[in-house]
Image: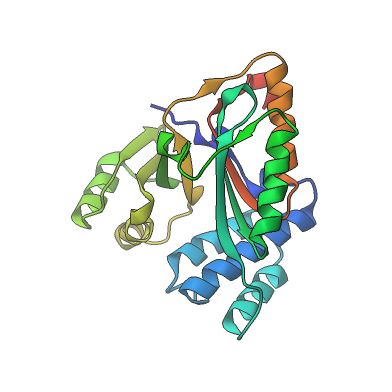
Length: 243
């Protein structure tokens, strides 16, 4: 049962046109995660996973170090999370996650992306109940039974485990992220995670065709061009030629 979650998330590295925009988004998220949970990645697994993703996306060390230094000091920007939901072109469900120091500005910018593409922004909770909020880990080199046993012994609430050739993908509730990751590290030592993050996965997809395909891609482009937008999750099923 392939979830194909890679196609439903517009990642920072994939959608940003310029490297500087990618660096900025990572720097902001690293700052917020380190400010909330501490700047030591050994004691903050969310930060550790984020830093590993940043390095894989070739974010320079000085960008990461600067964000950590800012998080360790007093003051700094006061970024807060903001989430917007609605229906994009073709009635595909959309969740937009932001980090902002000006919620009024961010809401106006995000709403503009909806209105300019004949889309409809909704109220909080209007579509998120149709997504599963999951912690996802993908790696190679282990057997499915051994992974499941390790997670169960650690009392992790596993949603699903998939094995495709040598690749294992673990799904768990987002609240189990740190517990699940620590259980995997304890059982198998250092793992090279291909995926290590929290995502919204749509329970059902929305096939798009015709003019809706180009309009949805325009909509995604407008959203991810906004500095405050960190990630966009959606239910759209785009034709292969359009991905």
